[in-house]
Every structure is written in structure tokens, then in C-alpha cells.
Length: 576
Ligand code: HEM
Image 1 (cartoon, helix red, strand yellow):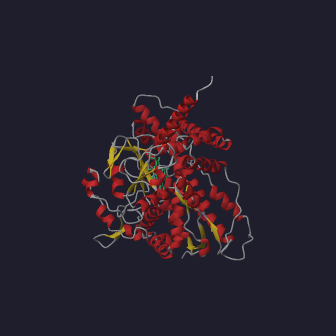
Image 2 (cartoon, rainbow, N blue to C red):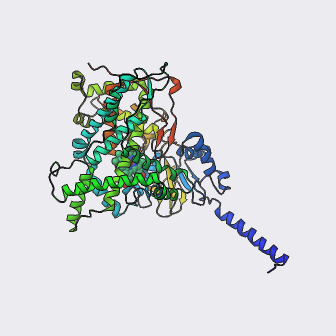
Image 3 (cartoon, rainbow, N blue to C red):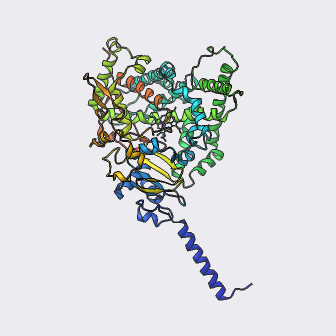
């Protein structure tokens, strides 16, 4: 069938108009009034190309959003990062973030971004659920793992043992390469993996111990001629679970970097042989540990240390049994919620804490006077251990309050902004800082921008929400910090009426653990872990200054905002 020239011209015009309309429909749609980058709004790909360039240059993602806010000189802006999707609203203001996370739970809930990150790995884990009955049930299942009896009487001992193994490993390294610099990031990861494993399953994984024993068999090592070259130590074979957890956590990166986001992750899990292997290992492991715990707690098999709760897997099984009994049901032994809570506990507990410690070690080296002050504070807090030249015990570290240690930990977390953003999704049409926010929009609340790491930007009181205006909280005090870009642990300390130094956790804006009901579930364990690890490391080693050529503050964003390396030069502390 032949078309007349007029028909062809008409068809071409219709196609051109349809193409133009499609193009217009696919262009970013700004939310009225909220500032944005003009060039991004004229591109189908929004801010993604600029973000891509920024990421290849810096290895960071979230600081791109901070940069956008600063370029636009505003506490709120919008960006388009995934093609054909609605904008993310970005804010940087501690006061408004507290309000959204702590007091506006009806209007804002867990964002879909968390679902995108973890859905492929643990679809029934609390972190990706909206705040509903199932989320409450999962939280109840896991509540005992953050209780004081478990943390102080069980977890602190496991932590102490694993950290003592790290100390042994580092001693071997100092013996073999005295005065030399090496990267200790992996050693920290070994330790936090040992810790989370022991807390979860009640048995030893022993990575640090096996590395220490391996090095102890070497008499000496070939060392570089100059002390400003890095030493690489030989390594014993690592257990399969090391590779398994590293593969599982590492896989989440594609959600951030691939244009296909969560779909790419879901495909990876299904089709990449390495991922399938890692997940099969994980599933077998968790199932076998759960089966053991069911025998002890539900079937009354007391051959295995009686029915004493030794670890988190025991606790979750015991809790499910109690909750089911209360409801007059049989406990669900095949529960996908129990399974995913265990899988999530292993993942969440290992990466974040090692990143926090990695930054802390860098601050110890960068600020030698503070390191000395920390060591002195620890020695005065544990006078008997100091006098006898022994290690402070697990009980003592868990119970004795050392304000300068608390202040140092808090400042390291705040200043590094290792979780640089908290996200909430609007569950209804609402407002933020006077702008209309449509239902379904993700609000990204930065923790590394103005009001956290530089002075707050001016915001008209009338633009704040009613709940924010009503609640004065600590905001006046927060506004007095004019040195938020500086690392200064003292900002968290004050003198009480007796002239004693105390720690005040609300002295400055800090949302690295989020806030409100959906704030970090594992915060208490994370603090205990940091308390034990910093205490034993600073007790046993001087972290000496390293040559300028080896020192840097470069970061990379994977799940957390992590340093690219943790190069150290250690010297053993002489015990009196
Ligand atoms: C320094 C260490 C840690 C940091 C900085 C950290 C940070 C965070 C942040 C920012 C959130 C989101 C909070 C929000 O949206 O308001 C979160 C959630 C969560 N964290 Fe942590 N975390 C750490 C350690 C841990 C540990 C040790 C565990 C458990 C073993 C854990 C388990 C969780 C869970 C289960 C959630 C989801 C809670 C929910 O959705 O209700 N975290 N964490």
C-alpha cells in the first residue's frame, strides 16, 4: 500500500509531536518552589551525569548532594538522580531533620531506598519495612539483643575476647615490622566480623586469632629500606564466611551506582555464580544455627550448655517461642522473619562499626595530643589494671564511665559523617521548610552539610513546621558551635556542679544513627563495641604520626562513608 506525500507528511508530524511530547513527559518535573540546578532540569538524565563524574573523581556520592546545596546556597533543594523518576528532596538542617524523624511519624516513614538496598538480600528484615505491625513484631523478636543483661554480661565478654585477639595480631605486626607503616583497615574488619559472629552464634570465628598465630610462626620479614613505604604482611587463608559477608555487603553498591538500581541487584543475586554461592553458604549456615537453637529452646534438649541463652540466635528463638505461646500458637520454626533478622544482624553489625572505628583510628593519629589525653583518661578510669600492668576487664569497660572516651567516640562519628544521610518518604502530601512535598517523595537529610559540619543556614522561623516551632529542644545550644568543621571532642563535655567532667550526648547536632522510632536498632551494641575496641587498642598501642606522603583523609561511599585506607605506625605501650 502506497501512502500519498500528504499522508506521509502527516504521519511524520504526528511522530515528531509524539516524540516531543514523550521527551517533555520524561524531562525532570521540579516540585514547585524548591531550588534546583537549571541545567539538570533540562536533561533527561537530571543530575545523574554530574553525579557520575563526581563519583569517578572522588569515589563519593552523598557529598555531591551537599555540594549541590552549597552551590544553590539553600538548606533545601531537589535533584534527579535516577532517570524517569521523581526528584529527591535534599535538606541539611539538624533541627528540621530531628523534627521529621522524631515527631512527624504520621507524615514520614522508612523510604523505599532502604528497600532497594536490602530487599534482594533480606526481604523480611525490619529495616526495609514500613512502621507497621510486622515491623513491631520483628523489633520485639530482636529486643533482647540490645538489653543491658545481654550486652553487659554476654556480648561484652565476646567483644573483649575478639579484641584481645586483634591486640595479639597487631603485636605480631609490630614485632615483625617495628617502626613501619601498614594499613590496618582489614584488621579492624577481621575484629568486627569476629565480634558480630560471636554475638550472633555464640561460637568463635577466630579470624584475628588465626592471623596472629600465622604471623607468630615467622621469625622475620623482608622490610622496605625506608620507613615511609607500606609493609604488606602475609595472610593466612581466610574462612569462607569472610568472602561470603564481603560479597553480600559489597553487592549493595550496584543499587547506588547502576542506572537499573534494585533490578540490577535482584538480577545479580539470581544469576552471578559468586553471589549465588555466597547466599547458599549464608542460608545453610543460618538454618543450621537456627535448628540447633530450636533443639535447645523449644525441644528442651539441654545437652548444649543447658538452656542458657548464649547468643542472639538463641534469644530470637526463645523470644519467638514466648510470643507464640502468648498468642496460643505453635512457634514458626520456618519463619522467614527470624531468618532474615539473623542475616540482617550479621550484615548491619559488621560494616558500620568497622567504618566508625577506621575513622576513629585516623583521628587518633591525626590528633596526637587527644590520643595521649584519651590514654590518660583510660588509665585513671581503670587504676588497678594500670597499676598491675594488666588489661581492663570486660565488666570494667562495660560499666566504668569515661567521659573523654565517650566524647572522642561521639566526635569521631559526628565529624566523619560515616552515615552521611538519613532518608524518609512522605506518606501523604505535606510540607518541609514551607515547600509542598507530594506523597511518595523521598526526603534526604544530610548529616555532613550545613548545621552538622558547618554553620546552619538561615531559616525563617515561620517556614518551620508547627511541631518544630513548638519544640525548642537543644537548638539554641547547637547554634553556638561556630567550629563544626573542626574535630574537637571537648564540645561533648561539661563540668557539673561538683566540678566533675561529664559527657553530654545532646551537646551538638548528630544524626549518624538516625533518630525517632526508626533510628538505629543496634546503636547500644555499636557503642559497646567501640568502647571495648578503643580502650584495648589505646591501652596497648601508641598510634604514632606517619609520614605526610602516606597520610590522607580520602573517603569512598559504598554503604557507609568510609576512609579509603587506615595506615598506621604502632608502638607498644610500656606497661608499668
Ligand atoms: C557505628 C555503627 C552503626 C551506625 C553508624 C548505624 C547507623 C544506622 C542508621 C543511620 C540507620 C537508619 C536510621 C534511621 O533511618 O533513622 C540504622 C538502622 C539500623 N541499624 Fe544501625 N548502625 C550501626 C550499627 C548497627 C549494629 C551494630 C546493628 C545490629 C547488629 C545495627 C542494626 C540496624 C538495624 C536493624 C536498622 C534498621 C532499623 C529499622 O529500620 O527500624 N546497626 N543504623
